[in-house]
Length: 89
Image 1 (cartoon, one colour):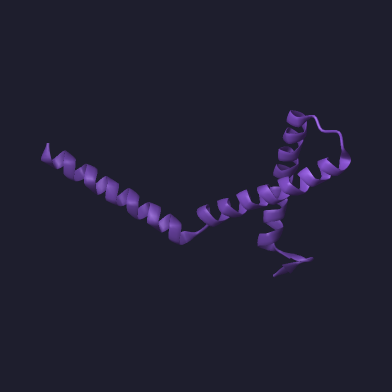
Image 2: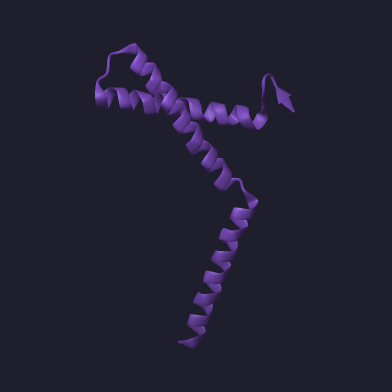
């Protein structure tokens, strides 16, 4: 369902990534000590893009059921191997 101009998923992505982006750009400004407003603005846009990418990757990995199922299968397989090793000893 639409909420304003963004659907729920995109809105939550935006809400999560914007504070992270501001934090990233602030840290960059503190480290580099830049005082030119155009450079600060450009760095903010880069930080927004970076943080959105990081949040998208997080959502893709941790909310993707197929990837979670692969991790669960690997964990089961690992436990089975450990159980077989315990039986042999």
